[in-house]
Image (cartoon, rainbow, N blue to C red):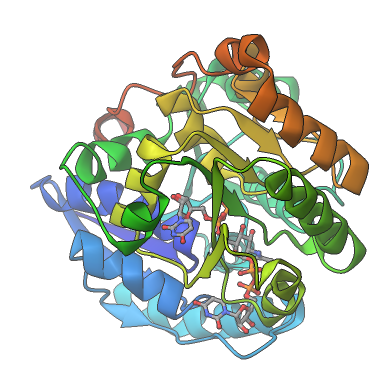
Length: 367
Ligand code: UD1
Ligand code: UDP
């Protein structure tokens, strides 16, 4: 029996790794061990609770206003002990956070093979998004197995010289997660509040948007909402204190509601029900595409070009005027809205976890 150690630490990693943990646990050839770094706390625990995944190890690294140094150092230190105790045959990491990077590096130092889930996303600018582009490229350097969500991601990896036999197109596991969260007739207070209006979802948290960009975004958003009486804006505010302070710019408006981060069940159902989305998030770009919900991406670059090509995503950047104009246009121009609201699924068919499990089984059989 092969020992698979799955490591993750933030909310989006958990949403995309929990379905894989469940699939691995159903596979008799594997003994699956879960280690969370706790880079996030409340936001991570919400996801673990929904998927009923109980970690075997929790490094509890989160600190108020933690730095990239803090996370990287504490994760490396903690994993050294966990890897030494568990002696895994493979470590699986996800995406592009310092948890991902440090977990991959610690495995490399101990010569444990690494599988990288959501491999091959690239902007090729290591400062955008920061530090995620570096983290995923570095994890790619170390990984033995690259689980690429799309053909585009596979091409990125091949152009970097990765062995084609080590790159698997799997789809994104977030689409697997959507199958477990949506379509259940969900309702709650926030949806009841938005009933009868066009509900717009907003999220923002990226490090490169801290400070001026977040403030400009929020001003642009506020102006467009003020001018459109049938719109209600719902903003689950990330726990990061930097984001919380900037979000105050949107408080005190009748048709704008700031709420605590909601669990994944609620958020996926908000996406399913909303009119459109404004976000700088990575994962939400993929989820929205699956539902055909137009997204204005509050960034200058995206590593998710498939959604832009399919027409669901549009980059608007972070300037107040561009956000205001882009948002207002989607609210008033029905042709533009119709063009962007066709459901497409460039990010997978909901069977990514199965493909990852099978790729690992085949690989272990061959060696
Ligand atoms: C991190 C990731 C980012 C990912 C995002 C998803 C890094 C550098 N960034 O950004 O790639 O898109 O998660 O949300 O890894 N906090 C809490 N409770 C929580 C979570 C965060 O209080 O459950 C607060 C803490 O004060 C913490 C701060 O938020 O210090 C920042 O958390 P951190 O993980 O460093 O950065 P994020 O902005 O969450
Ligand atoms: N999400 C959630 N609750 C919220 C806001 C977002 O569960 O209140 C989910 C969302 O569905 C997506 C993920 O969190 O799967 C995105 O996380 P985030 O934007 O923090 O990170 P990113 O994807 O940018 O790394």
